[in-house]
Image 1 (cartoon, helix red, strand yellow):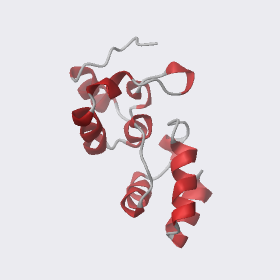
Image 2: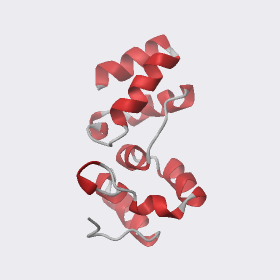
Image 3: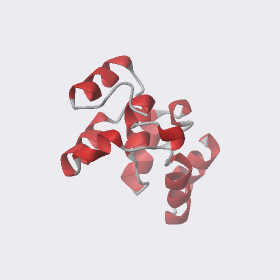
Image 4: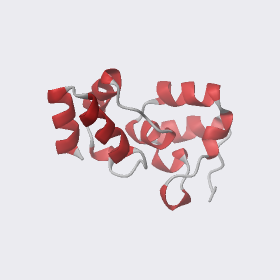
Length: 106
């Protein structure tokens, strides 16, 4: 996924950004990405899912999603995991828990 992200950032082509959006939609593998590079991809048009936003540590983006639709907190991703399962840092998982996420949701 790192190579795909780098290609999208280099080309800034909508097709490459769509591929990034599709590749990281499940949230898997996003912890391996540099959040600054991922943020740039979002600025260029890559789309975040709640799982991707949590995995990258983008609490601002996740908060926007929650404000628009509180049910996002229980959205099921791969293996029926919620965004909380993908949270990048312990303190962010705690913050998500305060917003209503159930720790043992499955």
